Image (tube, rainbow, N blue to C red):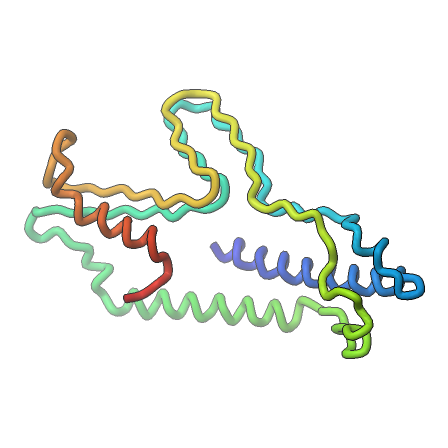
Length: 192
């Protein structure tokens, strides 16, 4: 996950630099304040336009991102995750997260060298504040070669629940789990 976070910070920085450079070039190429030529898109930006091919029976394919969770429910006495109840684990995880955030902050501050931003005069002389791009985001091409493949084009929430209640023919005892997923799906990232 750390690598993904670092890559996204670097991608954001690179796109910001490209944007700034294109604005400066557009300003330099506009002759006699005629902006019509530089407003025609001459650049394409494609992000997350994946081609995914599934050739296995029983594959799970997700085009962009997925949240996978596992929940275990057991009526066996003494069944618990002792390690998860230990405060030292929370403190250790917080220490790791703080350390990684400090590394990321140092990377942004010392490794990335941003260009000078546009001056107020340069900004006010622009006929537009954005560069025209042909933009394509998350247009995945997913090829399924076999049966029994679970596929999601964009965002997936996959839940695995183990319970000693219910059976394959009667899953009503699992309704408390399916209801919690429905709430998560309706209001992600909203705390009650």
